[in-house]
Length: 67
Image (cartoon, rainbow, N blue to C red; front, side):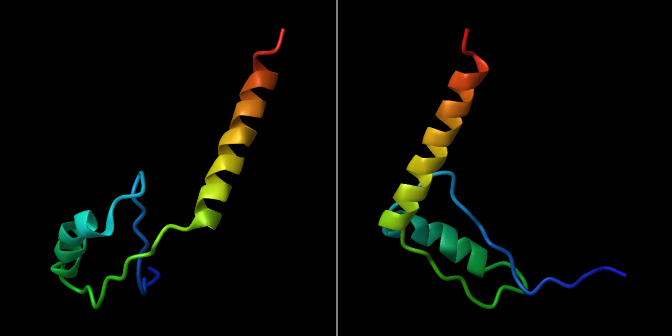
């Protein structure tokens, strides 16, 4: 039996301006079965999480290529 989805999340590969996202939001709203689309504003917590992930990856790469 196949599961039924109640929704999906879409993530951009980088933060984009809200007014630049309006055309994407409009296009997604036009898809069949879409009830609503809501934007999520990036905040300081997002930036902190990204920095931590980058730092962690950098440390792992340094450890991997260490002499």
